[in-house]
Length: 397
Image 1: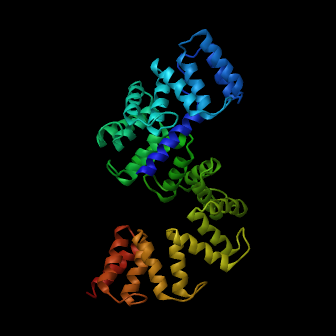
Image 2 (image 1 turned 180 degrees about the horizontal axis):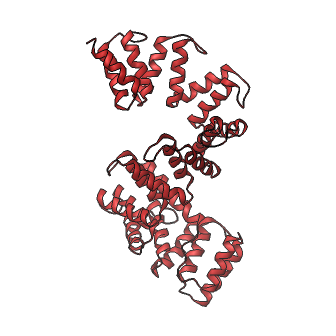
Image 3 (image 1 turned 90 degrees about the vertical axis):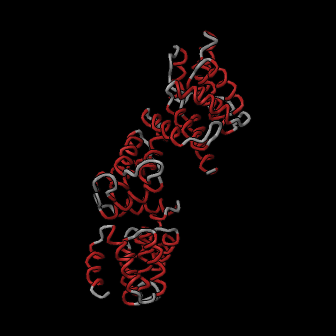
């Protein structure tokens, strides 16, 4: 929980440093400064904002922009304390963006003493003004009980307002909650809807998750073309998991023209970043000599590393190799151990194999009751092999 808090606050502050505050009744000099920031002329932008203040000492937008530059260290030395000073001035004048920025600083303790109560106070003021980022942060404060009483319903209400107002972080959070059924009804279609909104706003993480949902048919119909398209956008946006997803699509020609060379490039990038799917797929490249020299030792190493990271396809591959003795030492016990890990992770294929192994007593004790249990778990997920075999097993009991 503490780690999640640190991550969220760090993300908030990063966004504040990367993106200028929303424009509100900008003066000509502020507009000029905004254009200069877009052109990365930060020192000129600072001069423009200061000129705006000279013309109007109460120009809260100019103050907030100056705070942004100090926060990011663009055009001036980076200084959290100086950023807070400017945000405080603008916040006192009612600037919603500055109030949000100040709330985030009080919540994290950057540039000012950590004060959850002050964070909640400034955050609520900005949230009541309709600032989506502040609404999202206020939802988090209620979720954690920071500066306000812990209130799950209030937290969710603010997250929803933020998401509806276009806050990407809140959209992704609601998507995840609907996917997992965490505090809201489990609803994959709603999850896909929120991920789509964040994906269309350009968020690579949401794009990668939406791509995976199209690949697996979760909350949306299976659509290889849509999946490959979203994986491509996410990969080009720097999402490491999408490197693997897009690499897989290119390797097998799923939803995109097959291109083994490009696939190998993306898969290598994913493996180098320790993405389990990327590590597994690099093993595939080595196993079949597709984009990499054929090398059974490297292939086995890739499969094993991915399996040990909890990647189910890797666990299934290793289990099968040990079961057949192809590419790995023949060992029913080792195969059963890997199938068990994959089965417990929810893989219906592994559950079927474990059911069969208990049925015949291979690598595990012969136990028809345990066999039926695993087949039933697989059948509940729609596995037709398990359903058909259950009928046979029922005649033996």
